[in-house]
Length: 270
Image: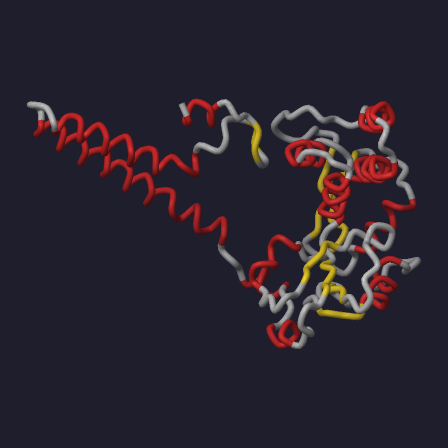
């Protein structure tokens, strides 16, 4: 029954289809093989049960070995990713119970604003994959500012929320900073000033909070996503983790200085 229920859960992560079953499949295969083998062993066909159990266990081991390289590569930390992390010395120099805003990508900021507005995680994944990011950004800002159901519905209507696989052909990936690519419509649409500011904020690089949070020593540090000066809470003494030069390793800077450098620059820094 559990397997059937999981098979009917049709949206999880970035693919549309049965989810939440693959990760537990080895455990279910082991349980089934042991149960089937034990049932046959307890009958006159004990030898057949042993053969069946051995075969099922061998198949499970083979499947695990075949999938292991792909699973390991999906979580591997390459030299390029390590080079994006702040140095251990810089992290150790943080005061105890520090508050650090991490400057991630524009897409992650939009996702954060949508989550703040109460949008479900699977809807967020879909709308980011199937729409121009600037358009989604404008809707996310509007949703935070309104609470009426009819107003929210009107704001959301222009976007494609249908959980289809893939991305529409009219969207293309555009690089706005080192390693930071976003989906934009072609031909390009007129862009709001707030979207232009988001692009300028990412010009020197970005570091996703989820990708590095678990690798840093804690010591009571509170890690927050930098959503921009309009949305960040005011916390005296906060730090901002960001690249101060294009492509440079992120470093900890005073929050006010970092916000001025990232968000209040009129033109991209060369």
